View (cartoon, rainbow, N blue to C red):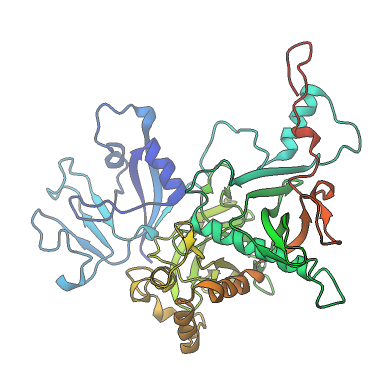
Length: 496
């Protein structure tokens, strides 16, 4: 593997986007499309070329690049100057290189253009941040400590001191475009989980309809629920019609995620891997995904984050993404420094992603360190309206030519013992055409392996005798939360 340390100069604003989403190709340049870098730090420091940009707004990344197959472009007008990655002009190259003092650059300094951003690894294991905010979704404990310091401790036995609820959707106040289609599809599936749990709560007379419901419209509210700084799941409030009385009731369902990370067995003594997560909206400061629970749909651009223990030396890990039909969507190497605790990268996958259960493996010298499975849920809605078949085929049929990247990784299937099953492919193609009730059954079956309905409560009077009132359920967003109430101003004008 040909790897080199290189540098990339940019603005502070773009640097933040790179940390969050990874490098992206420039649309054009001296060497055509690609990511422009240099092994010469002075070359990178000169970018961006904007004399008015202050030094405080300039950032230089130090990266590790697997250059692959390299072509030297050593004069202007070279026959492969901008088509070096295009197979119709000859050999496909991964990197174009302008040697120093060849006349290609005014500075005389060398320059490189890398076609595939996944070949580039940022060297800093964690960027440096100079401030932290008090945020209950990250640490309710520290918010509670600050509150006690300012106002004194709550009396013993005060409920919900270690709980926190965050509203992520409110039908009455959020605009018509909220939430996004993938989130709305999850919320509806979560709500159906709750109705199924309520229907199964009564044992005995199969004709008893008192705990059976028909949903009505979109969910009315959705909350995140945290307890002792750990995500406990989503709370979905919905209106439903009781089949015994025909009367509307408001129910709240608590759904909890199920982890699917596993270490290789037996774990080797050098295995530093501790966890794998896949999601979107990576927060590099808090080192977590803001898309809580990883609610992924076919149009998302997911990233993978790995948590490591510290070790005596650097290691190179290989990450492999496998779709539900055993197509290897992406593979890349990560340099895990001895002191690194997290690594993170978003591969530039072509969409849409095929719905179903995906697998992500992390290997070292092609020996498994650990793996996880994550769900890409089929969409029930497009533009908040029920999915039509044309949209279903477009969104659920996988990427064009069944290829998630320009290069194919099909040759790795035997190495990774991933047989491509014709039956799985045919099943995926049939599922891609589903709409209506068959689509909902497919989605519910996929979700059942990833999430579970922990409880259901009623916001008001209910004909179901086993449903407790939400105000008495300690997990419910409608239960008492004394720490969230505003008291009168004290003598100093402070409000608790």
